[in-house]
Image (cartoon, rainbow, N blue to C red; front, side, top):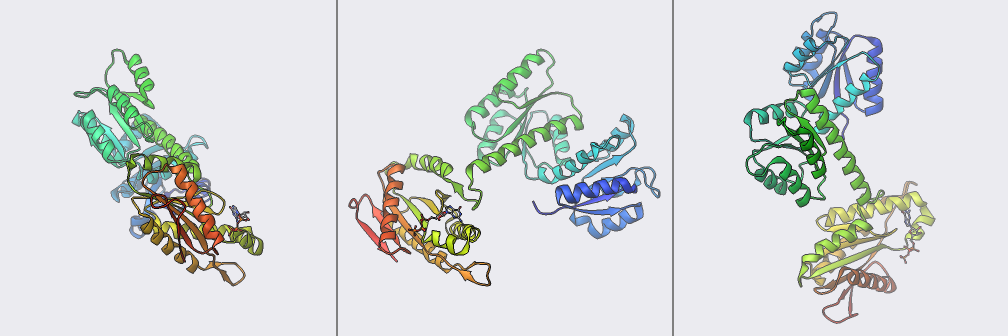
Length: 430
Ligand SMILES: Nc1nc2c(ncn2[C@@H]2O[C@H](COP(=O)(O)OP(=O)(O)OP(=O)(O)O)[C@@H](O)[C@H]2O)c(=O)[nH]1
C-alpha cells in the first residue's frame, strides 16, 4: 500500500514522540502534527484531501472540550479520539457524533492499538462486506457502522439474493448474516455458502436477535462454517471489533494463499498452482484445441557465471515482466529455475507459435542493467505443443520435447509439435 498521511492533533510531547515512532517507523506512513486547534484548522485547509485518518486529543489549550474533533469531523475525515478522558457518557457522546473509535490513554498498549485502527481504516476500503438482513432498520444500522469504518457495503434482503450476489462478485470478503430471514434462513445460507463456495476466502459473522435456544444456534452456526456469532442488539464497538477480527483472519488467509501460489522472485504463479489450474481449465475442453508453451532462457548459466546470481535474478524478473505484459491474459508460471510455462486454451498451433514468436522477439529486445554501466540481453527458446485430445501431462511432455529441439537447432527460436497432425512433426520459427 502507498504511503498514507495521518493527522495527529496532540499537545503532549511524549505522546507525540510515541505516535511519530509508531506511524512513521512501524507503519512507514506520514504524520502531520497540529498542537493547537488553530494549527489543526490550518492543516485541514492545506491537507484535507490527502489525510487518510486523524488521531485527535479531546482537550487542547485553545479547545478544552473536543472542539477540534468537530472541526476534523466536518471535513469527513475518519477520526479516532485518543484522550485521557474516560467514562461511558463521554465515550457514547462522541461515538454518536460519528467518531470511528474512542481510545483512552490509560496504558501504553493503547497507542499501538489506535495507530493500528488508523491503518485498518484504509485497508477496510478494499474489503466489501455483504450484509444479509431483511429488516431495514438493522440493515441501515449495520451499513452505517461499516461505512463509518470505511468498509464498502453490499446489501441483500434474503438468502437467495445473497447467493446471487456472491456468485456475481468474487471480491466479497466478509458476510454478516442474520438468522431470521424469509425463505432460507441464515443458518441454511451459511451451510449453502460453505458448500457452494467452499474454496472462497470469505469470513462469515452470524447475528441473531433470537433469545430462545441461542446457545445451540451459536454452536450450529459455528459448526456450519460461520466464523463468529454476535447476539442482537449490539453496539458499534463490539460489532466493529468482531468485523475487524474476521477481516484480519481473511487477510492472513489471502496472504498465505498468495505465498503458496506465487513464485517469490518473479511474482508469477508457481509450478504447483500452474498444474492445478491447468488441469481445471482443460477439464471442460471436450475436443477443444489447446496449446501449451515451455520457455527456457538460453545460456542462463553463463549469465550467472559472468554477471553474478543477482543479475541472473534481474534477468528472470525482466523475462517474467515481458511475459506478463504480452500474455497476461493466459495462465503463466515459473515452472522451473529458468523455465516458464504458458497455457493457451483455444489457441491453434499456428496462433500459439505466432504469439510465442512475438514474445521471443520482445524478450530479445529488452536491455537489462548489468550494473557496470552496461546492459545485457538474453534470448529464449520456446517449445509449443498443440492438441485437441491429450491430457496436460502429455502436452507438457511434448512441449518439453519441442523445447529440446529448439535448443538443439540453435536456440532463440520457437518449435511446434502438433500432436493432431503427425506425431513428432515439428515446425521451427526464428
Ligand atoms: N540467478 C538465478 N539462477 C538460477 C535460478 N534458478 C536456476 N538458476 C540457474 O539456471 C541455470 C540453468 O542452467 P542450465 O540448465 O545449465 O542451462 P543454460 O545455461 O540456460 O543452457 P541452455 O538451457 O542449454 O541454453 C543454472 O546455472 C542455475 O543455477 C534462480 O532463481 N536465480
